[in-house]
Structures are given as structure tokens and as C-alpha cells.
Length: 253
Image (cartoon, rainbow, N blue to C red; front, side, top):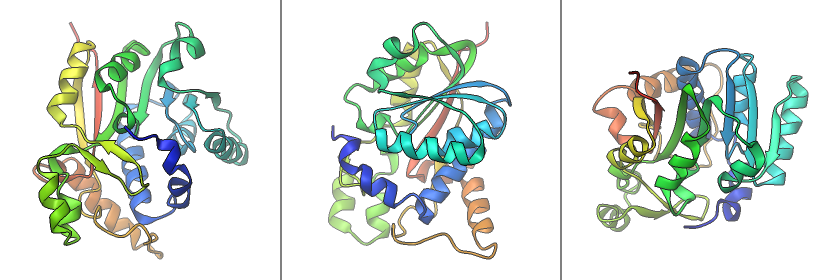
């Protein structure tokens, strides 16, 4: 698969747009329901730290890992402004043993990571090893069930038709990536001793909008987020999300 690094500058440029705002806000609200205040959290592929900063605002103790010095610098800058102190480590998912030893966490997050990896089963197994016995794993990934939705809503019919037979795609960062089906991820989780507690669809109604659109002002963002939040947890709408957000844990005996 393509490397996220190739699209990193585009990612940073798009951080404040409406598409990014919806995605980050929905993931944050969903984590609020599942991660308790003061929990220990490992965020693999933490990037600029949007979710980590939000979690630290709820007194969580956050360890962030990312291979990008530039994104970690942005994270550190925002953390300093908010007077919080994440543990930030340069590295990637393949280096967790060297970086963490035998440490485990109440919650392990890997958001927007799976689509850039060649072996999702191994990635989930690696992440699951860092989940404490009563902890949880939070992952987001591109939804292969709805890969044709965005191009179709944009009237890009050739791309939409092709997407029915594909799980790979060229994303808006300019990077080749892979989408996954929910049942596929569920099997990988099961093989790693985890089961899905809940799953959500991310960006159902606003995925096809341009990346140049910024969030509206004057309270007009609130109903957009409310509609997206309702759709994210309601069938059949959540199946049409651009991404899925899965929360998994070890089944109780």
C-alpha cells in the first residue's frame, strides 16, 4: 500500500475543513462513551493529536506514537498551549515492543491506520497485545461496503462502477490505500481474542462534499454534527459511512 507520509502535507492542510471536523468530532464523541476519565490510552498513529488532546482534557493519561516528526511537533505545540503532557514517541506499529516493552493500556486507539498497512490481521493482533485484560481497542478504517458512494454522489460514474469490484482506492491525500469490510475486521479481532462491542459509520451525509469547504459559523455546524451522530449509530445509515469506527474488547467469561 501507499505510505501516509506521501500525503502528510495535504492532511495537515485539510485539518480544519468540514470533512475533517466531522470525522474528528464524531470519533471523539464516540470515544467519550467508551473510554472512562483517567484511563490510560495508547494512540498508535496519533498524528497531530486531535483525539489525544481531547482525552487528556478528560484526565486520561495518553501515550502517542507516530513516525512523523512534523505531526508530533504540532501535537506537542498544542499540548503545551493546553497545559497537558502526553508521552510522545516517534515510531510506528511495527516498533511497539521496542517502544513500550510489556506495557498495556485501558484503551488502545489506531484511527486511520489500517488502510495503509499490508497485513491488517497482523496489525490488529499487534494492537490487541497492548490492550489490558479489561481494556478496549478503538480502530477506524475505510468502509469497503460503501466504496462507490462518494464517486457516485459526485457524478463520477466510471469510478463508482469500478468501486463495486475493488477494495483499493486512491484517496484524497493522493495515496493508494485499502478499504475493509466489517466482517473481515471482525474475523481479525476474533482471531486476536477480541469481540466487537459497538461500531459506527463515520461521515454518512457529508462524505461527498469538497475538501475545500470549511465548517459553517454561528451555530450552523451543530445540526450537521447532530445528524451525522444519529446516522453513525442508526441502521441502515451507518452502513453508508465513509469509514467505520469499531470498539472491541475481550469477551467476558
